[in-house]
Length: 396
Image 1 (cartoon, rainbow, N blue to C red):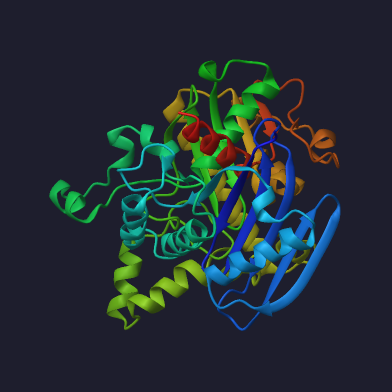
Image 2 (cartoon, rainbow, N blue to C red):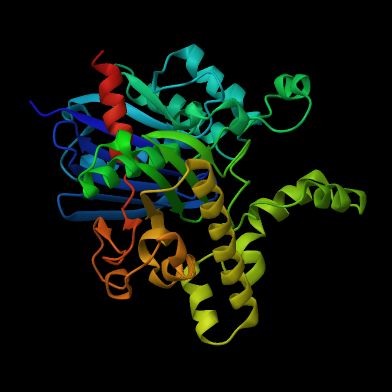
């Protein structure tokens, strides 16, 4: 009998879900419940080529799961007929204590909530979804798969900040890194695409979505990454600033900005949105084409920051075999990829314009035949990796 993993990716106001066949990795169902706690919500459920969509009030994550159950029932596959092997939960912050995917019990759930100080935008929502899901699927094992686990291989010199060690230890201040699930699966698939052992490859993986991070992967292990204590550090993102002088924040606080105002500024009002008026790279590119100087500056800063990290990771890795673009912006924006690689030919990094502009959306090589470094586009698949790790944990 076919067994399935139900993968849950919860935010503060939404739950995305997918039903994945354990043996084949095939998605049989996907869905979304959004605008939780915001009045009239929306539910979308897709199964076997059919789509069901409706609007209703979704007060909390528990009600979101009830709406998800309605979607399965409307599609003719009630939840009690699914033969679930497990429910896999994406959890953003695992701190230093969750090194691998972990079977969830009451203690683990409470520890995930306790780590909310390190991920206030994410872990409370992850916890709420876990509580609701464990109530809805009381007889099924639940597994937490952490965005931070892949980065537990960072050396101490990479994860430590240059502050007093006792202060860092007291408050849990260190580089944790994020997008680890994506960086892990993408680096594995890049090795498969190149037909080379993962353990032999030096890779720079660029996960470029609304949130964005770079990762130096040496032999399948994360050795450095651009996000730090929180998902705010590093690259320019859709609404997040990325790297900024900490002294600038002290200056703004002394000038009268509150902690809450700074939080909004850096997390929700900066990045492409703050610079160019939109958090969508498509709008930024349209602005560049129309001659908008703000859009031009936003694009140039975005590209410059990426080049900065590529250069740093080339030095740390002692060379690189492949640069991999993934996630929404990385997979779909050829002009951005071309701009990032432009000028790096002297390092053996040379993109092929025709391959780069190809409408193909699968995993592919976009470097030229003369390039010493393979430039790849590899679609990320965090849900499949969550399902794989959840199945592995429950099979032990």
